[in-house]
Image 1 (cartoon, rainbow, N blue to C red):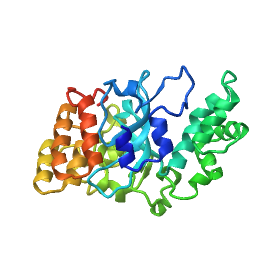
Image 2 (spheres, rainbow, N blue to C red):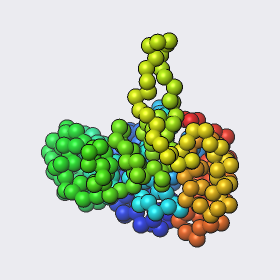
Image 3 (cartoon, one colour):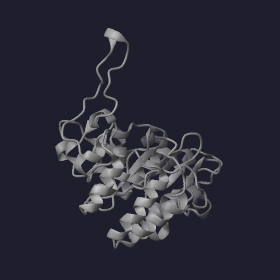
Image 4 (cartoon, rainbow, N blue to C red):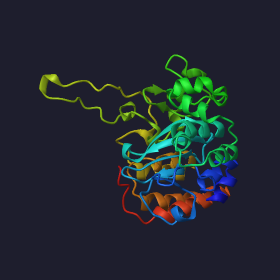
Length: 304
């Protein structure tokens, strides 16, 4: 895992957090460091290969913070949150390492700050490793604010703002490539987007039937857009589509297709290996092998 993160140029602080070398969570927290040796040996619930977990919570319904990385496309990698039970929905939370670290500090490290059983010098050492010079009181105060209020106070969000900081009136100012953020749509990004990045599947033609009984049936809250790419549409044969994209050397579309429904982990793994033939990128080869070793012999994505 370390070599993959290094080859991708991931910030050293994020690498150390992933590998468990920065003890971020309290001793009995259910959060785990995905890249640590003991977690690496686990073969828990498979997830789509577009997502590289940094930290993960397998307790009850798994959730994770990590990186969404689209090989074979021109998209920048971005820091995201993934909830397994929501069909692996990816949500962009940050576009820079500082934003990502700040998000985790004010969401989770505040628990350690408020824990009197942890020595202050141990708390301070973690903040030093993360290169954040917030006082304990600052962390407590800012953690009580909502996400928008926090971002307005933090220098890390002055540039390269993530999609969730925009609204439908100014989404054109967003310079990233993520397609949706809750009810916000960046439709221009759909042509390099994966199924798991669409927050409301009605936008791409799923769940379009009216709900309710008889005359009381309600129209769906969200309407399907026109000109949706084939790999996002519900009725296309995704296996045939993958073969078509391989035959036409559209490997970006082949990649996006397998990061969606209609494939078992075994079938995804087989196609990850096939895509290796068309990439010289060492990080991709390592990630494909890493993913396949853990999940490539499983029969189902249990949350789809």
